Length: 255
View 1 (cartoon, rainbow, N blue to C red):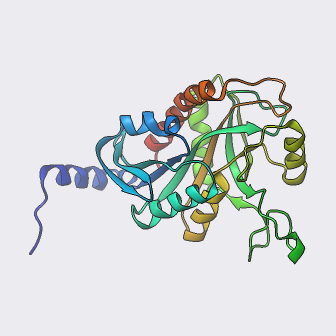
View 2 (view 1 turned 180 degrees about the vertical axis):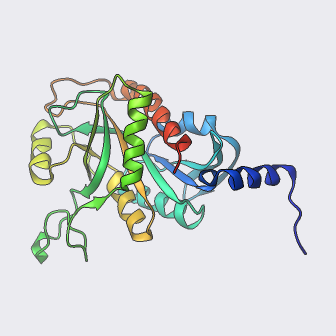
View 3 (view 1 turned 90 degrees about the horizontal axis):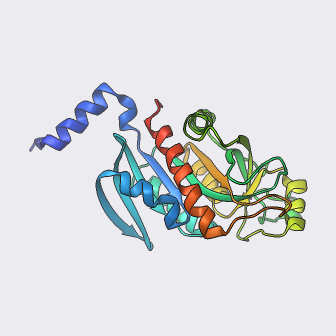
């Protein structure tokens, strides 16, 4: 028996027919509640689903289909979350948003890093002949972000937060909160990254293994040399506002 469309289904179908970009489903991942709260609150027609201790908000954001979720801190949480977005919620692309520590002296607090690629700096198979960060079966530690999503992200930063400088470069991920300037110098020398955090590399790996485009957006919370810093909770709230504006601008742009 053929199912008849209700008014909401018909409206959504007509919107997608006229605007194919509206049919693209974007998964949005943040590690902390502050990083996703304003986005989930702005979403319309949402339904919530809880899986593996994570709450997924599925609805529309500025007229585009989106699934918004807090994954929790660390690579395991991030990897589980990304796979659920792809397998259960059929995300067509994934944006990872949040904060990170700088690895480059040119990057100031509040500036934005857009990933060219990610590496997992704590993944070490060097005794087996692999390069530092190189994953099993890979020829390089690099996990490249989608070029089109990168361009859209950079444009969104310049449009929404023109007071911030935007940098494109490598994001270094590991299950360690890196606070010492000495450790940051080691990571920068070994991997050439612009910032360090705890989720992006895992999300990158899952997306690439599933053929899903992704990009990582990070607001910088501290200087590379530790010469300037802000209370983490205070900065996270401020960064969330910036990152939410960037993500919404990306969602609204043509795919």
